[in-house]
Image (cartoon, rainbow, N blue to C red; front, side):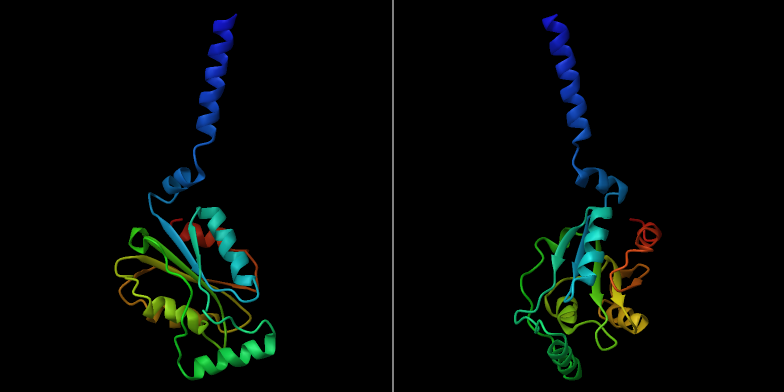
Length: 187
């Protein structure tokens, strides 16, 4: 009886270990062995919601793009700061760095549309932080009310040596269409 108990216990443990294979490992297989990073900027939380949804679906690592000096928490002053940065073509300093950037095969960059383009800290991330996008598969996604096309095109121009995948836009914080887009880009 003791041998039967030990055998059943061993089998259950083995099944448990199999069932607990990390989500990361199974997703890496689903992503055809590609390591994925989602870099995103979010002021209101809309883009962050979409980025987190994508991360759940792809088990990607995440990096939040944040300005060293935070934007105002009030809408009107924030929009004026953002407009001034845009008009001056500024590249404000951002917090942190992506660790092991070179290890990533696919980079997804998410933004809201601000003044018909991406927030300027995103351009800092794409142009000024020393990341090499050459040969990386890159796709952009945005949350928008208007100007989706301009915003996505502006970001594509900043990474000319990347292998650009299809971009994606969604109104507000809606995740409708994300699954279809991820399938289209091989994730």
